[in-house]
Amino acid sequence: MNMNEIEIRHLWQKEEPEYKQYGESLVLEIKNLLMKLGIYGEISFRTKETDSLIKKIYRKGKEYESINDKVGARVIIQFPEDLQSLDNIICQYFGNRIITRDDKATTMSEYEFGYQSIHYDIFDNLMNKVCELQIRTFCQHNWSMMSHALSYKSDKSIPISVLRQINALSALFEIADTQFQKIKDSIKDLPDSHAVTVLKWIESKFLSISNKEYDREMTNIFINILNQLYVNENIIEKLEEFYIVHYDNLVQSVQQQDSGVFYSQPEIIIILERLTNKKILLKHEWARLYPIEMLEDIASKWGCSIN
Image (cartoon, rainbow, N blue to C red; front, side, top):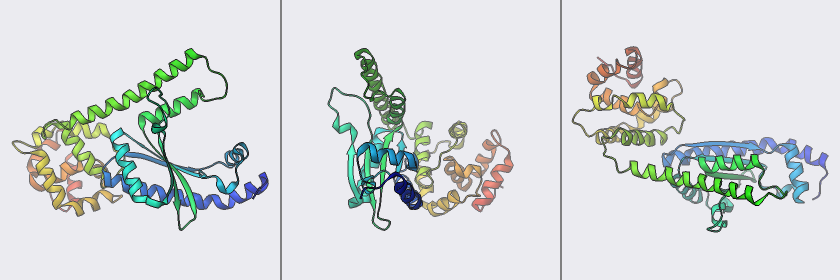
């Protein structure tokens, strides 16, 4: 059904709140999937601006009903390995709700570099709405933003010398993605007692129950006293045992909005484990970093005392 601009504006004004509701619902579903994977992702969604919607309809020569990105969601994650894991779980979870899936990387030849991302059109049966979902790494996202700013895909002819620079820059972003993944893989080979290994372990477990952004500088400061907190002990083994036994209480404490600042940090797992098993040692080392009253507050919310 062909509609004029006024009709499109009126219809979109009526339907946009429904699409926003779908976007919010989809974001919650994606957050739950990220928590299952124990990885961090920046998630956002937006509905299309009215003018942008109208322009696309006329530019593409499409009907209003055929526009599938009236609402769009985006997930930006850290590593290519995480991108693959997220893609797999999205395909499994949404199943036949996925109308289309487009992996941009698979459409390029071995001699090409450029925009990479995985796109899905996901249908909601109850709301009868479609949302376009994009997932990409931070490197892919940065390339997308910069290439958009350069407008290198415009119809205007670009000199060969400039195109070569663009391709070279695109290759660097792809190499950066690969190198970050290699560094992550190398960390896996470090011993269990290594601070970086412990950091990645608590981060993964924390994100599996929270998926909140945290203050990394604060975590790094706390990790500096790790060796003093665990003397002649297998750190990961002790933490794993604690995590399994106290999982339900840990989830409840971390997800409470008024728990306190440290309950929104990955190191809370270490703090609570030491409060449970070596509170005197923790109290001594804690005093080197923070006021003892903060530890008393953490202990009180956990249901124990530091004495």
